Each structure stands twice: as structure tokens, then as C-alpha cells.
Image 1 (cartoon, rainbow, N blue to C red):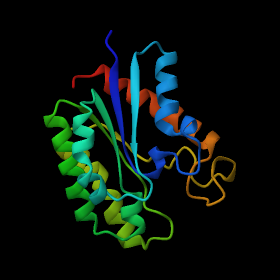
Image 2: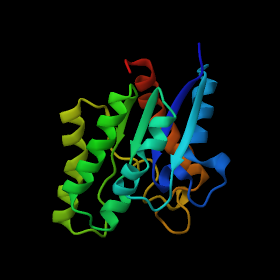
Image 3: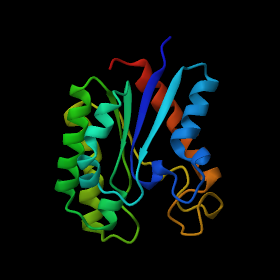
Length: 186
């Protein structure tokens, strides 16, 4: 089997904020996939602090990598900055559509509204991911924060980002979703 490329395209949660590169989520996912006998190269295309608009500006970099599959993970910074949810949705849709057109399978990676965001904005924000997944026929990993957020043993001191055990929890949770994506049609 030929080496497949998996693009991990997102923000600090993929970039590995506060961790050595060997502990970043893409590296840990690659290790789990290789342990399952897959010839895979996970590309860390995460940049800390980026919003969906920033991701859209970097889309050509991802397309140039010609990934077999892409984990599309943006939104936490949009939510934090109170970006209108319709803007986040439009940016995610533009990225996902371009990736699909280029032949990459896409897993949309959702994120819950951050706890300090007002309820109305949070409700509208959280609706973006299932609505977009349904419209484009994408699988949706519901919440990238779920495996670690709120557990001090799995967070960096900032309480927002995962530490190394938190990343391991994220990788284990994402693994079956990534395997299904890689096994499905591009």
C-alpha cells in the first residue's frame, strides 16, 4: 500500500500549543495509525491562534500537499473572538468544498462553544458544525474538546489546551473516526 497523507488542518489544538512537536495531535495520530499497520504521514498544518478566516487564506498550502484525507478543525478561536457564526460556517464550507473537489476525504471536527461565551452566541455557533456536515454530507466528529476539556489532569496550566496526556486522549477518541475516513471513498 502506498503512503497516504493525512492533513491535520486547524489551529492550536492540532499545532500542539505548549508541547514538543512529538506530542502534537497529528504526530500522535500518525503513531496510532502506524501501529494499526497503516502507511500514513500525518501533516501538521495547525497554526496556533488561527481562525477559520486564517485557515481559508492558507488553503492552497493544504491543497498543494494533495492529502488523501483531511481533518478540518477550526472554530475555537472564532468562538472566542465572537466571530459571527455565519462567517465561520462560510469559511469552513469554502475549505471543505475545495478539499472535496481536490479529491480529499474530509472529517469536519466540531468544537463546543467556550464556556464564557454568552448562551445565544454559543447556541448559534454550535449549530454551525452539524448543519454544515449535513449540507455537505461530511462525517462530523462532534467536539474536539470533549476528551480533555475541564479535566485539570489533561490540560496545560491555561486550562484551555491539552497537555501530553490530554493529546493522547484526543488521539484515542479521534482514531476510529480517522480510520473510517481513510477506509471510505475519497
